[in-house]
Length: 145
Image 1 (cartoon, rainbow, N blue to C red):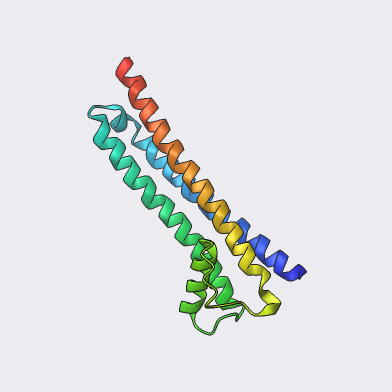
Image 2 (cartoon, rainbow, N blue to C red):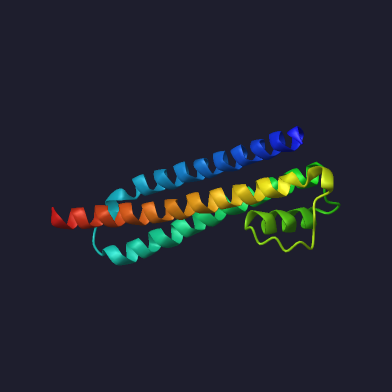
């Protein structure tokens, strides 16, 4: 049980760390594009930022799913990588179909993967909204100057 807790906690921390790196990269891109973003026309640029932020968020979530899949396969919990990836995605998104299960000795990892998915999806939703809010606020402030 303690090994599962240790492994699950480490995988959550790794996934959150990778997501944080993705956030930093997104912030750097937005900083470099600042002058372009505040020039008119604003709305098409806001749509472009939305598209880019969604791609970044999908990349961060997909990376989290792959981290778990690689761990499941490395631990020998699934014979084929496709099964590990499928289970990881189903657990990460909390769908929980139940058609593939972890061995009893490792079943706590499914809960950790689901917890990680909830955490990451919540963080990414907040990130997406914050990026859009920040860009739009900056655009409106530049218009009033």
